[in-house]
Amino acid sequence: MDAEAFYRYLTQARRRLWTTLRALPEDALARAVLPTDGARCVKDLVAHIPVVEDGWFRLDLLGQPLVLETVHLETLGAEPTSADEYWHHEKEPLESLLAYWEAVESDTLRRWPELMEVVASNRRIKVSEDRTETISADEVIWHVMQHEVRHTAQIVQMIRLLGHQPPSLDLVFLTAR
Image (cartoon, rainbow, N blue to C red; front, side, top):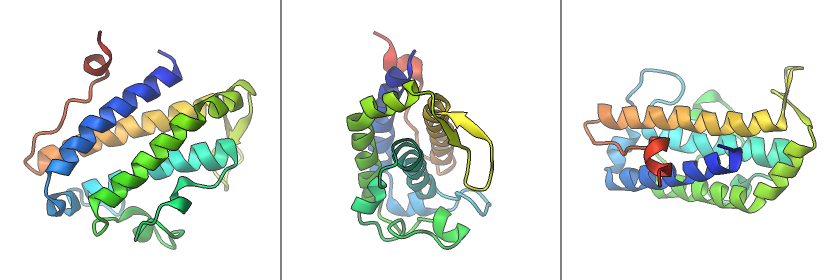
């Protein structure tokens, strides 16, 4: 399976996840499930997943402005000044968070050929501003997709811990013909 096919699988899995999330009460999605300074509730991860895709794909690979800059979100709109501002989005309406995620997905699909040009160029990307290590553009693509799989699995587990039935997001069931 190539990167584009895997990204298309993620778009299918998102639809199932988003449908489930929209059926859950806002207060459940905002309830802290994990005792951590990081993502504590479902909404925190729903905010985090597209921010990572937006940053790596738009800023790091394409050198373009974030999609976030075009979407008004109460708690995501400005550069966070603390870890608390970065991670915690329990007050943000689910529909605002999903609108941002949908906008990121739409932009990624539109720019996929440009992303693949960067991959083909063999350009290396810094792992972070404060480190010297680099990874290939192809590794960035796979990192972002793997990052989403890991965090959507956390969301699925949080949904279970909240007493609700999560969707099945397994690749085999969404790609079988």
